[in-house]
Image 1: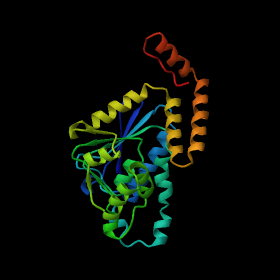
Image 2: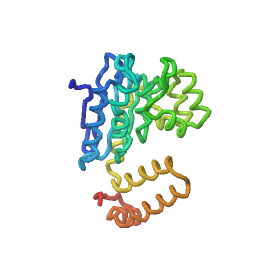
Image 3: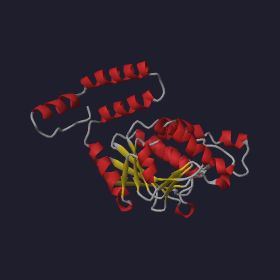
Image 4: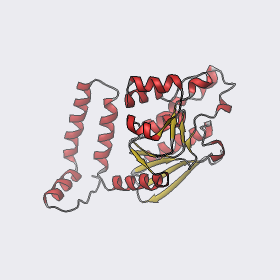
Length: 257
């Protein structure tokens, strides 16, 4: 399998996964999807890794699915690829994921960015879900995640029309966390990741789990999940260290216990 996904470690605790098919704007073929799934499964189990940054290249974060692998496919072909498992490896990652988006984030690329917890985008980035224009619909979660992120009417406008939209528009809708100059995307995402490395890992994990739980269950159940998670953190040493440090007006030294 060719090396269509690069792994970099800019600093302790932070891993950058970089899509590496620049000649086709990082289009998602099966090999890239499989390497992404394998990487997320492996990094999620590695205690040395605290935060994952997902990136592409200057021209494209990811321009969507590789249509050459889809044009002649039938339903059995698509089912046999088990895309649910490949997307699920990213969605089920318990560690914070930061998407660093430059250039195009279209179709499956936009869906991939929506699997992240924080999205940093360059001002010239372009987002969109153009699947309808090639006779299909999103299959990586956009009808669900996009609707939850921006609401029904914005989502319908994006999904039904298939038109790309700017990073500024994405930021205004709440689809982008931080909008920065193109040249600053990578450094901003890595700086955020470094900040998270110094925070207590158990608290970060339970915050992520609680927010994701809110998307999949009623309010009362989500509140109960949050209460249980909140109470659980009182069993950690980092809770005591964090509070003592605040009372003593010093920087905390979290041990992730």
